Length: 372
Image 1 (tube, rainbow, N blue to C red):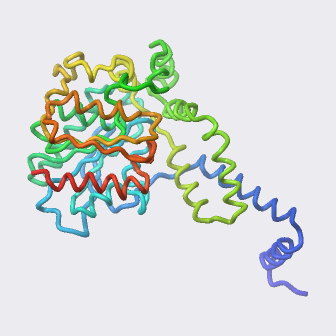
Image 2 (spheres, rainbow, N blue to C red; image 1 turned 180 degrees about the vertical axis):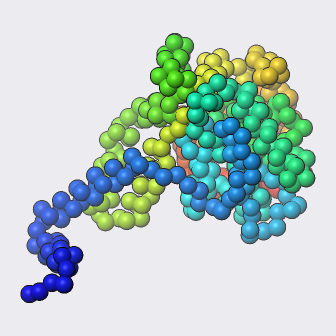
Image 3 (spheres, one colour; image 1 turned 90 degrees about the vertical axis):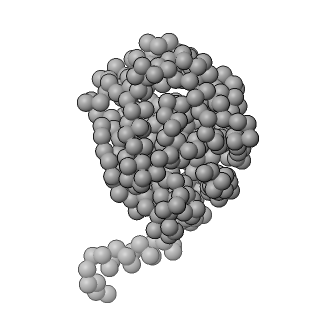
């Protein structure tokens, strides 16, 4: 038998071994298993919906996701603030099937997303006041671009308290405030993340010092993982092996996609991270009007008078629902203009889960339709 090239011989040998040698089949499964895990260490982050960068300053890159499906001239634009917890901001546009951006598109909105960049040493001293300033720059860019005086602002997780603080300082620029799985009153319900934040200040300062003034997102990720150690260090690897054994290519694809997003981390400015620990997680100062100031302006959530939509996840172990829903008692918005939505999911599920996007975020859009 003659072969035209070595590849042909290898293909024939491969097919033969698959048929007659069970050990070879198991070897291929194991090889693929470890290849997948290795690839996750070299993840590449992107966006699933067409967008343009319209403004950039320091660690902010403002992205515009033009709505090509419906006319959006008569609707207020939507600005999404993703969480800053060491992960990539494309949480807001995770995939074609799981995209908060696309949910708002379906309702005719033009969408903007604050893409927070990994901090470099140049920006290690940016603080909470700087991120509120950068948020204000993004809002003003949108207002100038669209001619709309008040916009909708949507905060995911830590982007939620950031949105609440921003709205309290700039209520005149915000039409509706939406927070999702956002820690507001950290003592409204017990959570491990709050317990961990009670470690001595020196511990967090040491972590920042390890990064020469930057907070390595890997440290934050390890903290999240350790809250569900069995899931993150054992169960998910068993699930991947079962997917390979079952030949479930769709599940494998979803696994790789999520792990690439989850395992990718970036740096936060050290000062910003320490501000968060001090004011939010230790001091619980959002519940104490005027207890801290940003650029000379006292932070007081009672300044919020616009309609407010609050989302929380029933199974959220990071931000239990009472911590998120506490916002309603801290704002001056009339009770009839506050909407509470409890999802069936956990933390990430509330932010980008298929069911939450289909059911709960659709409900958010139905409410926004009523906003003037």
